[in-house]
Image (cartoon, rainbow, N blue to C red; front, side, top):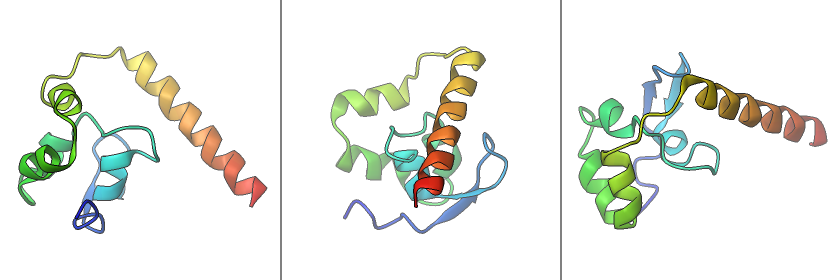
Length: 91
């Protein structure tokens, strides 16, 4: 089942606070975090889990990520934060 590990938590080295595996797996509906294998390998067989649930081309992108400029990552995080803030105001 895809959600079997979703409630596990770990400290995110990118965000600086605890996050669930679900967040790492979905990043608020965007895509799988590129650091998911590095962060979760000690907790459970994350590679095997992802191989069982993701298409091969997405798995290859996780295993061999292209380096992204820090500015692009920061802009994406700002965009997600703005979207969350706006969704919170609409509620």
